[in-house]
Image (cartoon, rainbow over all chains, first blue to last red; front, side, top):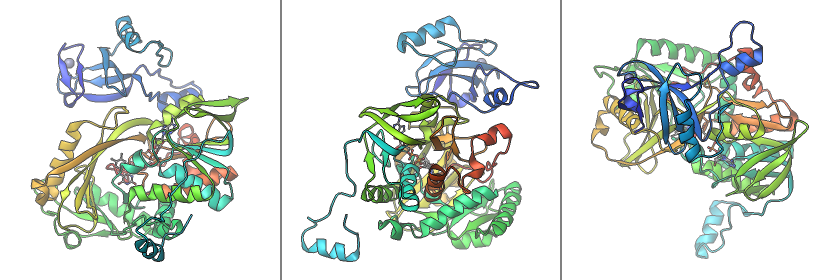
Length: 109
Length: 414
Ligand SMILES: Cc1cc2nc3c(=O)[nH]c(=O)nc-3n(C[C@H](O)[C@H](O)[C@H](O)COP(=O)(O)OP(=O)(O)OC[C@H]3O[C@@H](n4cnc5c(N)ncnc54)[C@H](O)[C@@H]3O)c2cc1C
Ligand SMILES: [Zn+2]
């Protein structure tokens, strides 16, 4: 079973305690955006076979949203961090780089 | 390639089965093909077959990173039905179901199509209304379905507990000509015919890149060398996003693991397929006697072909309420496949931003039933640039907000 640490409670949670919320760091587009931008925001997903950034909610705990960096093949978790972050913290990126040199995800590396 | 027939079986019986030939060749890749299909699952192989059969395009390669039929085509629970809601869905799924009726004869390969009937239980008032609506829609579409009473449900499948305390059976959507087929045989049958037409099926050959020139596809790079092509069809289910990234575009697709399991074999006890969408489980009995069970998909992206354990627990717990007699059964095997989910639960059969590249994906949890119809339509799209069967399933529908919403029909994973 997948285990993620809730960054607010600081405790490891089984996936049955959590609700998955899809891709993280989506840039929102609204009125005034081009069709292509809005389509990208609404529908297009990275869906990588590799390092992924995603949203989770500690549904049966504190109830708060947080973000996680995880590998979609090995299920290795590189860290979790608060939902208010606009980009992954350096320490999480460093941990990914140590395991997967040269990784990229959208504009992050 | 010699034909399979009762005479062939008799002839081989007399010579100790020494005369059977390989069902398909294992050729070395050529430098270039008119059409390259990535992915030798059912959809890729069916596309190649109808390209040859209906459109006379035979300089074709189907490239597969593992073994043919080893993806979702060999991992699914083989339910075939066409009782969807929207007209474009009914058209392609019913075309597919109809092709299944004669597929064994067409391919000269026994795919064991068994139109034993598919029943989708209504276990809430909401579902009753939903399925009544579907039955009406199907009547208009010419798809034979019927809303049946709980008494008829019990008659068709006596092992169902129709008066359970939590989820009583209030009726069902019944498609008498739905059923199952042998999944491997579908892939093998198409592969054999493709090979017979002179097409190359290149197994253990992974596509690692897509080459383009001036916005047009020129070929692919693979673990067995570079292969040029005039047109490229990407038909890789869960790996669609991965291939699209190689070609430089993104898709409205997310890949998750979907699981199934089978029990120890028991005596025949159910001769229809039953789906219970409210409790998220479905079951049928294989010819070997195993109960074939499927359930929900993971909630988050992954490529593990394994899935989370708690989904099995949920599925089995739910099914025991509806089928109390399975509570003591031992489960033999469990497995997972990576399914490609779209937001509207409908497939994508489309041109792409790169000229010459076509994509067939998004069948998610329910594309086995669609293999012949999808191959038929997608071959037409690749050969002629348009196909009435595929018209509603283009990528542009997301931008234009023209969804083919099948979230109810696709309710449970199947
Ligand atoms: C547990 C489970 C139960 C299901 N139950 C049902 C059901 O009851 N009824 C139903 O209709 N549908 C069902 N489905 C869905 C159905 O299995 C799929 O929709 C269908 O099989 C998809 O076929 P495909 O040919 O598109 O994909 P696949 O059979 O997955 O074929 C794609 C192929 O592409 C290959 N590939 C990927 N990447 C590359 C690469 N880079 N280079 C070369 N090759 C590559 C893969 O190895 C694979 O063989 C189920 C699925 C699962 C997982
Ligand atoms: Zn918490």
